[in-house]
Length: 355
Image (cartoon, rainbow, N blue to C red):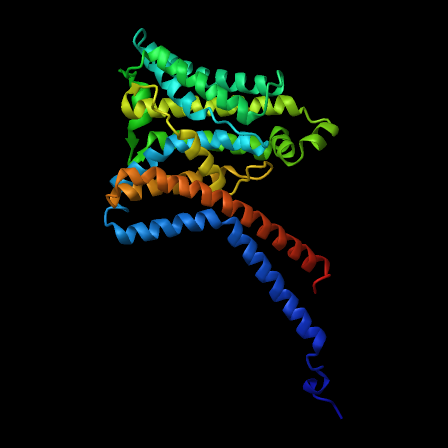
């Protein structure tokens, strides 16, 4: 007599229930990790949703174009700042370098009509200051990046006032004006420049050995030296690229206003650092992405844009942005600890210790 298949089935016991619970725990931990990683993007989406409700003008083509255009300077500057922060350093002179680059470009434009020459001079100005920062920190050993770049902030600001004689210099070549203020089909040329520069930096950090060295230096500088990584050369190179980014940001800034002025980059370095931290990087180095940094820059740009659309008193803007920076640093510490616990829990699920 045959026995029905149902009679051969073994009832689900504790082991089966435990396996199901472990699977759910792994899925839950993985989902929580993705939420943590995508945190900045979720914040940006929430801000856009809120502002679309509070202002009917937020999602208009004109406003989105303005938002992207206004965010370009901080996005470029923050991408360069990311490289420096990844190594565990910081550059407080970036905003002053933006101002110096605009003044140098505007001054040179008085004696030449070559847009390429003016742009090259502005980029070279930024790279030269970045090189000076790197050499003073890594070769001369004059102090930490905080101290040296704080001093360079004062020097660059002073040079900008000397070159411009304290006045605004107007009249940039058409190439500079086009980069800063023109758009193609509603997409600002400056946003295209940001995308190109960010893509180049992403390739450098993700595809080349140099990029792995940058993360390694930020993760553990001493260990990097022991395994043969040219730590000083890597550190100098990120300051040069950070300076180059400041020069490029200066090109966009000068094009936005068709002028160079010694005060044009005021507090831009704070916005850049905020964008990097909001985007998921840590100020101690070794963690951060170009994509997250761009999202952080868009979050700051959205806050600026939203305050303007809602006609908030401009005096409140620095208070709001300062609060955002403090909250971002605090959130970074909480996020790092939470992410570490989640990854440890995920590893435990994978090796079966938490099954």
